[in-house]
Amino acid sequence: MSSRLLRPTSAPAITLGEIARGLGLAHEGDDVSVTGVALHTQAVMPGDVFVALQGVNRHGSEMVDEALAQGAVAVFTDAAGCSALGTTATPVVVAEDPRQLLGALSALVYGTAQENHPPVFSVTGTNGKTSTAFLLEALLRGIGRRTALSTTAERRVDGVAYPSSLTTPEAPDIHAMLALSREKGVGGVAIEVSAQALVKNRLQGVMSAVVGFTNLSHDHFEDFGGMEPYLQAKATLFQPGMARRGVICVDGEWGRTLAQQVTIPFTTVAGHARGPSEWSYEVLDEASETSRWHLRGPAGESLELRAPIIGEHMVANASLAVVMLKESGVALEDISAAMGPGTTGIPASIPGRVEKVSGTSGPSVFLDAGRSADAYEHTLAAIRALTTGKIVMVCGTSGNRDATKRPVMGAVAARGAEVVIVTDDDPRKEDPALIRAGLLEGARSVRHRDVHDIPDPTTAIRFALTLVGEGDSVLWSGPGSQSYRDVGGEKVPYSAKREAQNALADAGWPEVAEERGP
Image (cartoon, rainbow, N blue to C red):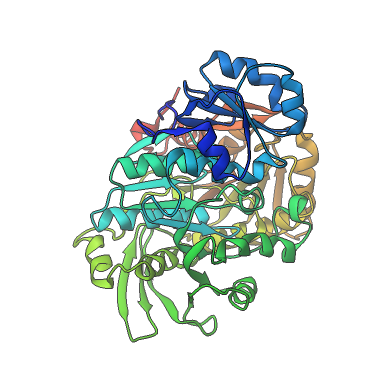
């Protein structure tokens, strides 16, 4: 992946005075020309305004000297930050709450206000956001458009990859990406949107052409405290100032609840047997790595679709993506043509989402990024439909996150798999043993299941492969396509895909040769 900053190659000329007036603020010092916005010193480029915010442990004003040395020409901060600057001659704009204006600032600097950017397709929900964004981007490519994509797993503009860590980037990165997309002639941008990003106003100044909702399940209670506040955070994406149109999956009760609150024009989609909806999907066939389904619309529209995805939950994501594209004005005939004759359908490759990483014979090994009970349940059901033997599940979850969901996750894992191996995933700064204990508690509450506690994930996947043979499946849920493990707050390079395929090869099973690692 490229280490380059995600920036347009040129920015519209704007002065600090124009920025201040646009935000309804005043500025102090010289009226310098600004060409970019940086929230961290590592991202500073010459001509940037450096945003100095109050952090958890320190104030960004402490890094101003470093930012100026790297070429920043002005500072955007709060009263405390301005006071810390002292009598310096550095040009500065002061706001009561600069974070709340970060999107507006970025839109002014990059010229992306008033929808001066390609059409944006934003997807939110608990599970399926990444998959739906990838499927949207694939469909856009399929109809001949240049594309941009922003997800936890990957960020790219017109085929060029950029670093990705946050589910939804900070506002300066979002607007820089939109400006670069405009510069490259991109015809559609698919963005994965987290509830945390919405609360932190990271999409300020971005008007989505269409927004989509996948589902809501128990997660992130450490931030929201319960399902209702969690839903309300997601619902802010479906407001008139945020989106033109919406598509809501109403397979679950929270989608139906959201549909009762939305004031922008919207439509609904659901499985044909899951209750009333304007669009309905029906799975026709699930081969080992491809699904085929029917999608029907409110005006009698009918479309048969195919995609290299596994499980009804993935079909729900793909149907959501198709209806979002239809709501943007794309004809169903064009969507159908995007699949191409003789192909597996929608030209999508979704890393770490029910991704098969094993060969053509021996046990099937799947990677998934799921870290919730709902994700476990759907993924296990999808793999069960393809498995003639037993399922061994390797699972771990994140530290410093909602601990109340862990026993529930463990119980779901044990109900869906004959063997459960609990391992470490991203402990962050939490004691890994405490994280595993929550999962183990739930797994051991299910009778007649074989449960193991193996802290080291590499050891865990290798042990899993000693328990399986032809016709069996292994699901390793948690790491997905992530390229690191967060241990003690440090990101240690780690690829679950490479480790799984190395383990398969060492066990004598076929592997994907190009993924074989040291």
